[in-house]
Picture 1: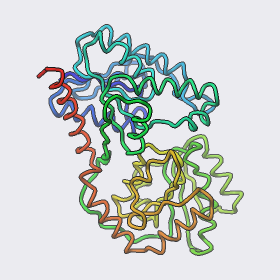
Picture 2: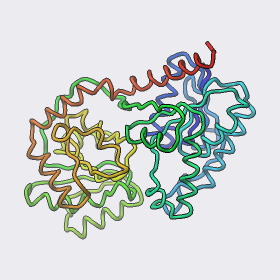
Picture 3: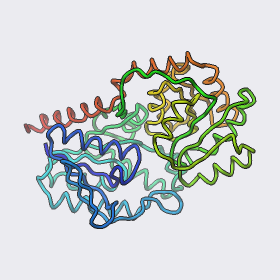
Picture 4: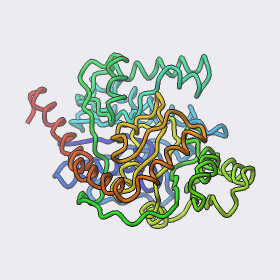
Length: 388
């Protein structure tokens, strides 16, 4: 089949879970003998365009920042990308059997949906997240939030094969008016699927993620200091960079946590993975996660996670309470500290249970399983359309 992938980010020029997923989809399709084109924006220096084996990379919009000073996605960039997608698809009518779009930014979805009848292709959409009305209002304010919510609903209602990565977002797609049943892909893990042999735990808490507001990285500091009342030797490392890094370091100073909590910023992935393997637990106070890949990374080392119950946090679907971690009621220092203490007191038996949980779910969590389902959905669509 001739597949066109559409996303304004390309790994590793832009790093993130959705970027890794889309790049993995592209490479799996090439390995399966399919013809793959990847539409994106320019993310490289002039004359240094990507050369990815078997993947034709086409930049349909110029290089520019994704995020403005407020940390939000810029509308202009998304519009220009959508315009570039529409122009390419309109000028390549009949060139593709499937156009597979990342839902964010929505203008790429709208462009592919608009040109679909001219292009004669089937459309698939990856919904890593479906934002609630309340979150749109929080993110953009009243009027802009309502407009964005209406655009999201329009994108959902376009004819498509929808893929999502949690039961939460599958249900939201149905509620937004999706005309077909979404396919829930539980696997994005690309590492070994053997049962891990957990390393002995150190009195260490690890946070790893982009430091944006909804991740609540500064909340790790008072939580660790509260947990030290029960675990005096407890330390923490907060890995990552982003707009809230200064807030994290300010919280360390305000709590008198120097020498106890470390925030080194961006470091090599090997450093993060080594610390995670030694940690008592992964602590993620995030209130919005579309999948929560870091929870799977922790479980693959036999390390339990402590997460927060929140209406937009789909990562909690990975937790079997008391088996591979804990979901606390809120992000207060006292609640987070209780989760840390529970993970510490769980000791080696909890780590072994986490390793068992990972082994039992490894096939479902594997990205290979998800990619098989994606290709099968393409084939099913071709049969419905009467094509080989």
